Structures are given as structure tokens and as C-alpha cells.
Image (cartoon, rainbow, N blue to C red; front, top):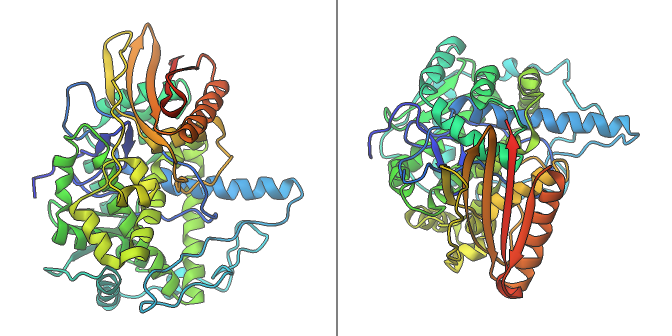
Length: 484
């Protein structure tokens, strides 16, 4: 495995996602307590001519995903204020391995009462905590059974006090400021973030309150925040143990090589890795008893509330973007396992998806459907970033146009008829600009792209969309420049 470089993450395929093996796999983050629904993520790719993985702050990656808890809970409060006393229950997971646990019922395991912040006075998560030495062998056994693989060497799990954990994360986050400033150009132009938003400042303001664990392939150590192993911390350990196991078997450090490709393979690999960890984690959650599951919800809610001040001004598209490898990734892995068990998941590690369309649509992955080759658009200035623009990227523009129109968990709907796309960003006299070219490979795809592009353009000042070509392969050009 190649040696990681401190603070590196990844920006690729027209999208910038939580960091990968160049330093460590993203901090674990819980899914928001809302049912799955469409949505996906975009932020810039790599600078022109630079094939190396791009930095991305680990702290923000963990925090913004947890911030979706705040978004979901606030939405519940708004619903009640409008006279709707119902709150959406958490989704149940369709398990693929009946030998691990019985399939879930149609009803949620833990019903959410009308109070959006249900915290039973008689249930204390700390009272359900267990010593790490006692619980770790059980968690390792669970991960090996569900994942269908065995550890080559025993994983090294470090449960450290909060202050030591935060210090470690702070060191890991050094050096990504330049990448954040590059990412800011296309993110502002597309409306993923608001004009004037400073991503570096956002990273500093957010802090490390929501990051609970990470796996470092450089040392092959798994770090967990806090030395009290509550049910929530157990789910953190399970998630990161999956990363450690997959690293031993499939070498997660391959992301360095995949990121050098001029396509979305690196994104596909990240979604596979995070999706696998989330898929196993969800099954572990379902295996907990009712008190333990309630304790997990209580702790997640408390963390979300602790983040509310730091994340109150963060745009929803940016928050949703961070969930995509987890939400869409876990749906992809579940589909693979449903069709071929964990052997199908293993096969995907050996030959990862090359497009985000394949992540959203596992049938496209089974067909090895490639992206349509689309010429890269020209910049009206010195390019800041350029790269592939995929189906998942287009789904994020749908979130920009209607931030509260879907769910917040990053599970985007499949995109039938998406061909391919490219984008470029640049700066012009204080303005941040982007030009995106997207092509369909069917008439149905052209219709859906047209609807999304038109809605996006209508939602942002100065955004335009034009089209050319025959109905079955219409080429759309999306453009926008924004101040700040």
C-alpha cells in the first residue's frame, strides 16, 4: 500500500467527497433519522493537469454528515408548526443475509414519537456502556460474519479521550486550505454553497464535535473518540472495523492510483468502501436490542444538537453532498449483496465502478455501462479545476434547485439515460464561474436532464442552460458566474 500523505483527501469526478486513504478513511457518521429518498453530491474535481488526489478536511466530512441530523429534526419541528403532528420514522434496512438476522418488519424498530427530540429520562446511554476489551471480540466476530471475510491480523482499536482525539484530527486536517479555496469556485458558481462562504472558515468553525472515529491505513490503527463504549460508539467501531478489514483484504490505498484516472472510478471506489461500512453498520444496528437502539438515537440527537450552532448557516446541498458515499454507497452495496452475496461485493472491490451512474444504478454496473465521451468545455479564463461530471453530480444540482424536495441521506435515485459530462471552473474579476457540458444517451435521459438543468437555472441568478443535437443524444451546456 502506498504511503499516505498527511491531510490528503480526494476531489475527483466533478465531485469532492470525504477524504480517503491518502491519509485516512472518513470519520464514521450516523444516517439522519429520515426515510431514504433521492439526492446526491457535487463539488469540484482536480486542477487542470493534476492527477494527484486532492485534499479534503476530514473534520468537515464528519461534521456535515452529522449536521443532517439537525436538518431533519428542524424539518420535523417545521412540520409540527404547520399542524402536522407526525414525524417520519427511521427507515428499516432490507438485510441481505437472513443467517445474520431476520428481515426487518414493515414497522420501524424504534418508533419516533411526536416529540422530535425524544430522550427518555430513565434511559442513560452511559449505563449501557461496556469495556472495550469485553465488547471488541464480539464486534470483530460480527463484522467478519456479515462481511464474509476474516482479518489477516487483529485490528488495533484505540479508544482515546476526547482531547487527544481532537488533537489527532487537527493534525490530520492540516494542509488542505488551498484545495478548499479551489473547491470554492465551482461550489459557489453551481449554488452548492452561498456566495461569500469561506470553506476554510467553515472548516474551522465546525470544529471536531461530530467526528467520532476514523481508520488510519498508514498505521493500521482505528481511533474512537472517548473511552466509554456506549451502543453508539459500538456502531462507530463496527463501521471502522469494516474499513480495517477491507484494507487488509483489498488494499484501500489503491485510491491513489484510481484518483489518477480521468473518470469517476475514484468516486465509485469511495462509495463502495463507505457503502460497505454503512451496510454492515446498519445490520449491526438492527441486531441491537430495543434499549440499545434507543440509546443510539439519543446520542445521535445530542450530537446533532451540539452541531446546530456551527452548521446553522451551512447550505443543505453542501450537507447532502457529504452523505452521498454513505447513502448511495450503502444502497449500491445492498443491491450487490442481494444479487450475489458478499462475493459480489468482493468482485466490485477488484473491479470498481467507473461512473457515479453505476453507483446509483447497480444494473448499469452489472452491464459495465461506460460514460459517453463528452468534449471538455473551454474556460473564459485560467481554469481552476476541470474533470468528469457524472449522474450523481447532476442529482446534486437537483438539490440546489429544491433543497427540501427530497431526503437528506444522500441516496439518489437511478438516472436512466444519462450519458456523460465534463466541467471546468475559473475566476473572472471577482466572479466564480463554471461551465458544464452534459449529454444524454436516450430521449428519456434528455427529458430528465432538461428538467433538472432548467430548474437549476431558474433557481439561481445568472444561470443559463442551452442545448443542441438530436433528441436521443442532446448536449446541454450549463453556465453561471457568481460574485464571491
